[in-house]
Image (cartoon, rainbow over all chains, first blue to last red):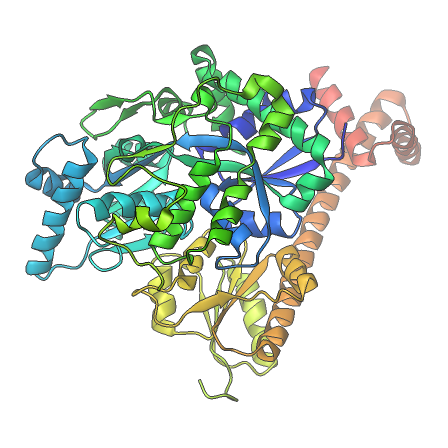
Length: 388
Length: 196
């Protein structure tokens, strides 16, 4: 046994690989003594990881990059040797906004371009009638949720900084805020979209997989210096998470996984609701309509767990597009270096590799992402807030 | 804010007692403009309306992520606010996270002015945690007392011991088993319940 590890997490379904690694004994089998610490905010997770109160953390992928770039906070280089999940978010709208979008839409309601164009018409009408701008909730300034909402609405011609309001809300507050009308919509991870639908206060408009085919969501994050000082421990942790991800992805293990996650000190939400996310079979409307997707949340399958520096580059490009980061080749290199497929491969050998890794990103709008020409790529998008 | 006037301080804390302890400390130290927000509803809007120079927030508050939005330069933000981090002073960051509090300051407020506020905040948060700890310990000591008395009663009755002998037996068993005397007493109660 190595010394005890403290790992912070936020109660969300994409913490599953960590929670199952600990509660199902995969971590102990690797000789690890892990204490999971449930946290209430991403700021806390980041700060406690940064100052060493946590050895590792369940972290928003863009926060790992922002930390390494020193954006908005102290600069602490982070290493991410394992993706805890791809996709998994959804955009949920209030019944009123759902009706307004449905009233304006032409085309397939699951086509994000059709909904984004409809949203643009709703926004224009509201402006003409003197109504307050729509308010969208997301989880953190450096979050996939922020970038996914922005990417989607901007493709339809809605400027996320001028035409609507984007506000940060802690995930457990999302549903209340939608019910009380403080926000008209939100983008958040599981299980909060399903909770809103069950309570009859929201419709799931999009799975994030509609917007981006393959989007890294949360990573297992450690400080880079810690990764250098504890290579064996880190490799054991990666293996434990990998075994847990394999376990979770077996359909016959989903019910047990949901029960493990449902415990009050883990996620503390009804197991049935959690299982919908794992199965990718979600109730999207209070009337009971079910929508299935085999891309809703990927925990390890299709090579999801292996870090892909192209994903890091895409997130960095979003930071540049929305004025959070300046564009520079050094910053791009730093961002990409956060994602560590080398550490993943060192821990797992050939086992973790995919013969034919699926392509990254797959956004519904704009040209294919090009890591070698971020400026050129971003120039193809009409709306943005790049620093000059 | 005038350069020498007291900075306006907002305390975001869902614990009214801790907030009161902190507020009192700040006032004693001469910081007169202190407002406490306990309600997380429309947190950002309320902070903008108050327009503080310093924001103190407890780390158990999920609203902390809401404050992070104030670092972003956007239309919604009038006065950019930054977390109080001094890269040269890791110890004070550690101390504040350990104490469970975080400070945010308006751009431009001098480090010399925020440091005493943060220090006071850390010491008051620690004092509050100590108080809570003592309260817990007193409570559990009282509980132990009751359990030990009942276990003594059972031993006296079953083994015909005096009260002192019963206590000595409990204590020596606890030492041998390397357990707390309250735990041994509890197991006697549990066993006697089962054997009823």
